[in-house]
Length: 75
Image 1 (cartoon, rainbow, N blue to C red):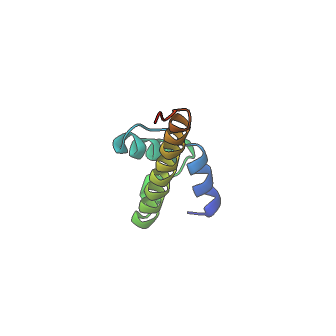
Image 2: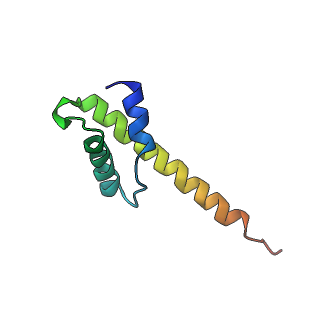
Image 3: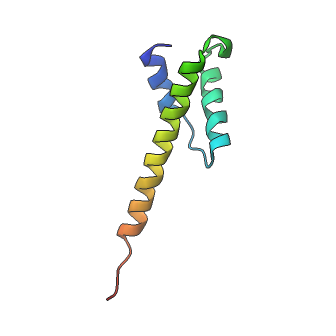
């Protein structure tokens, strides 16, 4: 799978709330891009899942940072 396709896949993922939804989002995005799932190697699928999971973790961290930066700490 080319880097361009992998970038398109990552860019089009719908945010997921848990790992099962994340896996489904990756598979759905592959189908949207008309990619035959049988032609995606296990290594490529692992890479896609890892990338999607990393993106989700970064998104969660940014959201937490936004929420915590608005909190005042009283001493």
